[in-house]
Length: 405
Image (tube, rainbow, N blue to C red):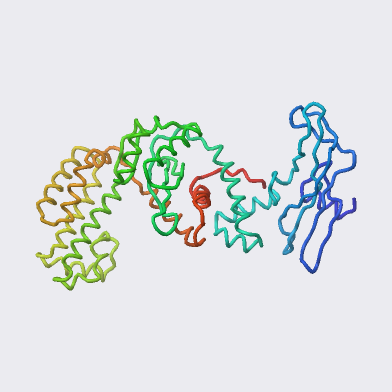
């Protein structure tokens, strides 16, 4: 072995019987090829009994390695099969790559570090590989990491759907509200997603029976799924979704009044934003509009502010009293969109009232959804549910990928 071969053997961390026995550099292609070999007569241990066994046969394989400066590097090696007298013929695993991969472990570690920070397609262009090959690497490491996730302590979860592709194509997310991590994601937004979650939870040491609190929107499918598969969980209807219903009602009142009140044109966000988030010009315009005491939109706006204020209270009895008063006043207001919200709250009373005790919301899921949609937009989509879900786990799952260094 010459000095260059010895240097590359050390750089790759190879140990006997493996060693670099040939180094070829092609200037025109800017490519470095490192040939790894083992001495004739080498023995490898049987994976079952540990007995040293002779080589049965070999087949050359190639792996993409980390670039050598700006040059693409590849490892070549004769992968052998050993023959154990007792346990038969087995493939000898190489220490620098996993079986079936065309990349070295260090190259895959680089890929996994990069795809957490930028779109897969961009990474593929930077390292001169196809995005399909990188997606297979991601799938391997995500699946491997999720196999080691412990869900035994999960008790409070948040549930929401997020758009996977254009149209009515959704993924349902199940999030551990205490650990603030994505537990499970599955295509669809129906009751069956809860059955799949329950199975996934049990497979990782958790139990649907240990779930005590669930935060979710008013979806009938979600309510049905929770009732069937989370028998001991109390439902808290997410106050942010309730607030969304009130906001939609305020905007519906504004739209119905805009023809008779031209000043309401282009004023949507004045009524839907919290006062503290308005700039000076917006505040002045809002105050001017509020002077019109006959403005139905202004009345709806006051109901919005009151509803929001009620959910700052942490006492169940007081919260229930104020909510009942709000519902009665809303029903008597004659503002049909707000009347509808009042009846919606009444029909979901237990889950709405539960918030004053549990204090759990889907706020973390709203943040997660924003991160996923931003990643999807940068990537211009992930083509399949599987790819999108793998990226969701990678970004939000707090996975221990156990990558080589």
